[in-house]
Length: 79
Image (cartoon, rainbow, N blue to C red; front, side, top):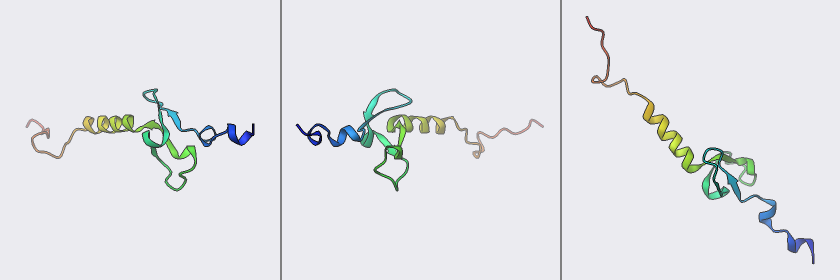
């Protein structure tokens, strides 16, 4: 039995990662965003936060902002 037969490419390259927000183990390539587009081979090129958690974080941050450009929502001083 040779060493090459026992080791596959997936054993060397991790194909799964645990999300730091939700704690679920997901597929690295399909479920995590690529943060460094020039280095697709390295594991450090992928985020530690899954796509679903990233989307919910961005949407939550956008909903909390109060639009102050509309006249109906502006607060004028009481003269």
